[in-house]
Image (cartoon, rainbow, N blue to C red; front, side, top):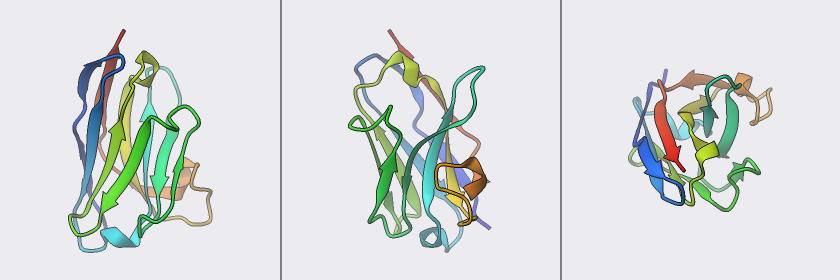
Length: 125
């Protein structure tokens, strides 16, 4: 089992930057692909970015491509999401998740069996 704890959210002005962290418990962190999702008020939780177990491959939602960077440090059991050029529409609760169900596409929430509690990101205009 893996427990995930996000941190680093906060309030930032449009055009600013924030870095999120996802700290994992347990010694099997490197066994899981990791993704970031976000959920804005009244909207469905949506895929933001993902990274493979080794960190070799990454994927991004079109809405964040070129602005966000996902990374991981398996020696520190931590994944990261660096967010630059933030926009008001990036305002949401951000969740990290560990992929446990390879039968589902990495874009799908069902692919992930472990979730953190979320961290709020608010971008003011």
